[in-house]
Amino acid sequence: MWILSKWIVPALSRMWLPVVGAFGVFLIYAKGKRDQKQSQEVEELQDDLETIKRIQNVKTSTTRDAALERLRKHGDLRD
Image 1 (cartoon, helix red, strand yellow):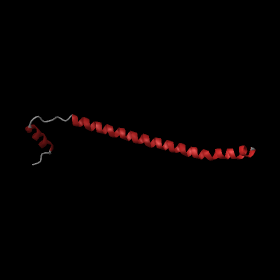
Image 2: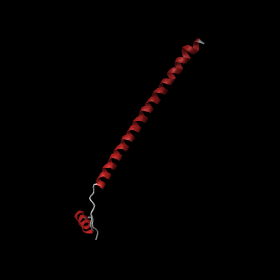
Image 3: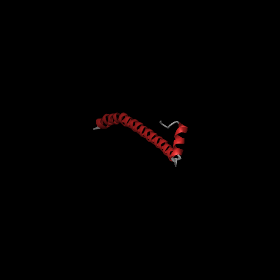
Image 4: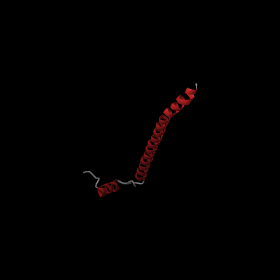
């Protein structure tokens, strides 16, 4: 019984240390990837929000002549 406690138990505990360490490294890597993905999604949403704000701030033309003038001014009028 003393062999079990003297050599086997410390050997088993030393075997688990690298496994636990590798699992810890994996967890840190996974959290970093998740945080990176989340921050990228936030940036994309902010870009979308800016685009929506620009679209909402466009002044619409009330008459046909005003719309044609606006299109001519920007070169978007097709003949």
